[in-house]
Amino acid sequence: MDALQLKRQLITFTELLFREGFLDEQFHQLQQLQDEKNPNFVVEVVSLFFEDSERLLNELAKALDQQNVDYKKVDAHVHQLKGSSSSIGAQRVQRVCIVFRNYCNEKNVEGCLKCLQQLKHEYAIVKTKLEALFSLEQQILAAGG
Image 1 (spheres, helix red, strand yellow):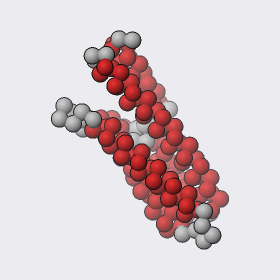
Image 2 (cartoon, one colour):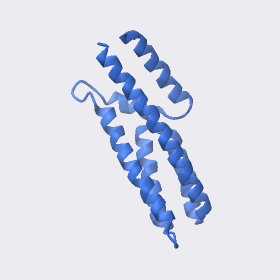
Image 3 (cartoon, one colour):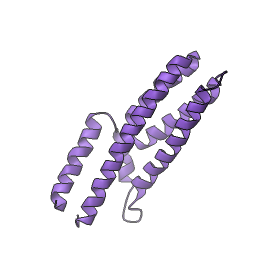
Image 4 (spheres, one colour):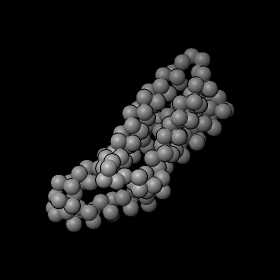
């Protein structure tokens, strides 16, 4: 596939991610910060998001598995995940975090566990989609685009 076809595919895929609510305007703003001096800026920031999110998801699972759940601790982890997902424009992850925090405030362990599963699901999807997006960008560069 030539660079032009790949670029069209990239544009279509990116538009789909926005239309389906995986990404929001913040992701565009992140892309605007990338330049020749820092050509891997978006990939680096998103990679940090992936690392941080996986750590937080593990911490949340441990915290919710306790006999006496520390809802302040759970809420702090969810708040952190909400902030980092917001900073890269991972809109669907951010929305689940908002609901999750409400369950923390209510001290509703069933609601928290349900949100944790939903959060893991949305995170896995956005990670797969962003990795596919970055892969397309690499293919374009390799094709000389």
